[in-house]
Image (cartoon, rainbow, N blue to C red; front, side, top):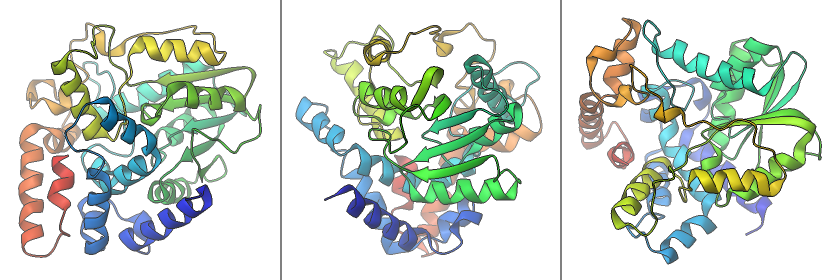
Length: 340
């Protein structure tokens, strides 16, 4: 199937699944408005890439079909992400007295600061989601942003939010494959990616495309999902852990930090700063929203977010969705999505 045929098929399926005006709906309201047959198909499309096998043959199949797997993944999880986490689909470090949304914004602003993004810069957001980080960074710096995404539904929502918050003159969102970008060489002053290039089947591929479209002397800043140097691919337990991350997050293969650094160098980048933000001695762990430990909640506004993302909150959501599925309110396959 050609690239244009794949895009047309994905666009048609997105319209069938989410319906008209879907960009303005969020969370459970968005989930309940899905076409039920299309929802079942969306879940099936994603889960067929995951058969519990961690051998090289199974891995190679997932790497080859990364585009469709990623598109299917975000078709089924975007509404859950917005419901439980907000419009910025990433983790963050947390500090005392800082609420959840402030921490997420600070994390994005820090990346923009480190990249040297300034007013008037043309910036590429690789794997832009529904545009949460783009909106924060555009406000923070005054730059102009192009968001690249392979999921039609997320692009619709990103454009809707940009207009809603009067930022449409500072940003646009386009569909494309980050392994084969269609921008002219040397187009962007800066490029950033926030927990998105982990969906690439080969890091050198996406990094090479970024290097190509970045102006000479420009900066690429990335929050990358990688395994640490302690990861042993020949250790069965390690591989199972990596597989669970891959399954739960639509990642074809988790690479190590050394592979990521070398990939950057191989395509021409000079690595100026590299830091493991998950290995800081923080008083509040970066993963606290998933732990169920209420002692880390910093504000009243965080209570609802924390409940939805905690173990008990996820169980509650699964239970409610299961009931709605059984009575025919939610489409079949909804519970399977939340479990994955």
